[in-house]
Length: 377
Image (cartoon, rainbow, N blue to C red; front, side, top):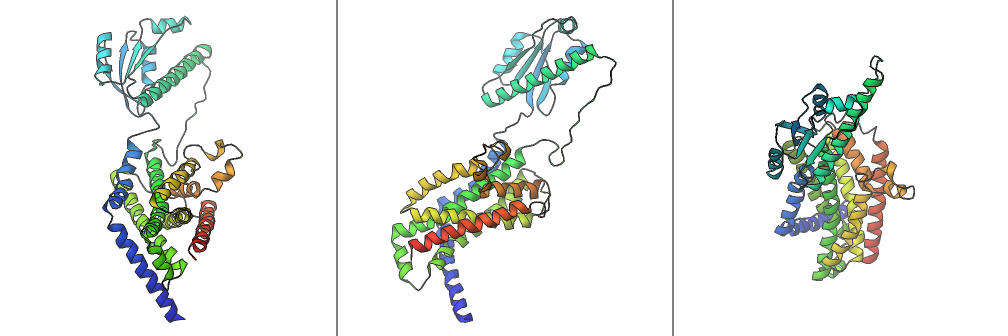
């Protein structure tokens, strides 16, 4: 029995070594893997932001009163960055055209007097719309700041001597309200899903195209050995890339503080990679070449990202779609990632997501293995 087990493991090790060599002989695929777990994570977390950060702002305060200064005080960091005052309309246009400023605030003369007499007064906000996303956020944030200022002014005029209740929010796990750490971990999960799913399916598709799958089937190898030789090496490669991305890119380059158990996160990343490998095995059984693998992967990736919970939270999902999100391994993996690394939560607190990740992963891998054995028996 021990001899048969040793022979079985030796054959599996030789097949896995072949897959490792085959992967590293493809320079395009290796470079794509390096890019996906380094530069794409940096770009996803820094280039496009869902929040307004340090929009360069100049002011034209023609009123120069206490009320106008209170309004300008609302346009402060981290959303807006004041760069000084200007005094002419031509200077405002020059600042916007030269991209020296993104926002120009123009407060007219008589602003304070108009508010005291309850008259309508216009405050002009000029925004450089060359970046439409940032321009929309700047105008939205500015509108909220002005509305809050007017509400405060109205409340002070009506009840000047009545004590007020002030709401102060405290954020435990993200006091600066940065979204870069979340987007970095989300990009790691997205790339892990892509490569864990695509690499085993592509390896099997290459065997089909070259006709070597028939040689493997007539050899003294079981379908399980062939399947594991495609899954285990690719899972190890993805796990190594995830480790480098987390420790070098996220913590080193982006400067994200990791508060939780990194080893527990990597262990669950391996479970998630096995989940995606099960999907890759399913894709391999329905594909006959690499092109079909690519097309089927494109059909699978968007729903997985949609049901990850980052675009639309579970609470905002329609009732009919909530079960689909709960069946998505991406949703549970991101819950564990954010909880472990950013909040420092123990695994006991995240037991439901961990259990769901393991159960769904076992189901997906079993389904993929069943289809694989049936296809290549």
